[in-house]
Length: 173
Image (tube, rainbow, N blue to C red; front, side, top):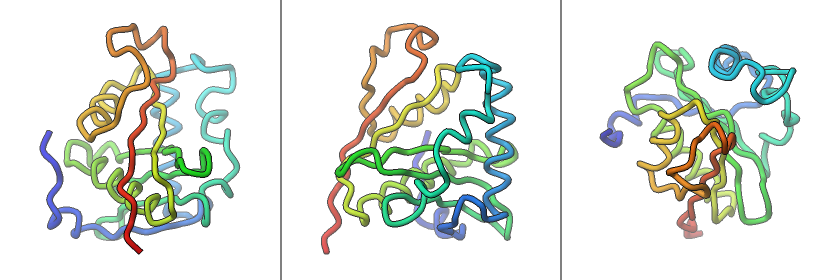
């Protein structure tokens, strides 16, 4: 996978929005379908809705969190969020690319934007988990410098929550 060059990243509008903004809805709607399709009730009887509502929307708002989307020609094509994990660590959540826009490097753009925003907010580390049935996510995190906090040779279905971390470069201020 090649990295996204700055001219590609510049072709998008990066918006920081509250969870309830209508431009976030495509992200949440497709995540619900994706989670339901891939996982069913693997993580509990509440399924995708339970996972998407696990954290209050305020956790993804400033000053400790952020929700970013990429728009192309006014259409939401990718996004993601972070919340406070601890005083030095942001936890990434809801990394998503619209199904019609995959394989374009947009997830890398989202990751870079989230990492930069987290560093600007004073975080020094990123933590995240992904599910065992998302090999493309696992590969993305490995390819972008994240350290797996699990045995890569183990059965992902046995692990369930594949955790990663990455140190951030402090923002000179």
